[in-house]
Length: 148
Image (tube, rainbow, N blue to C red; front, side, top):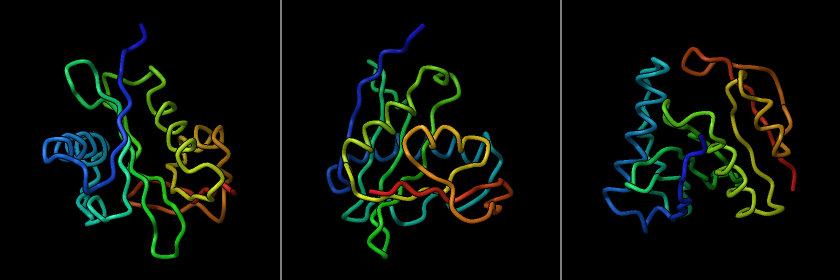
């Protein structure tokens, strides 16, 4: 069964408090609770002026999947915090978000740190492994870049 989900995109400054709360709640549910990684999810970057948030919500407004796009201090764009609610997985929601962010950034180069178990997912969007694997919060990751 395919889930109906509406795509949303917002600059940090345009998020309502409820929208921000719902995005952070999903990320905490997935990264902190489900993956058992006690780390500072609230890293101060969600409300930076150049941060863009993408999410998919069901008809009731429940956030099913989200990601954020940051402008790193180096000037490089960084995709991160890609996650989908456990009960919504298998419906292509993260792929829809990645397609939306790629459409948004066009030929601008970007980077992400992928959990090694899903690096092939990001490769589908033109991201190429760079460097060695590393542990982040006990989970193997690898940096991946998408040239412009």
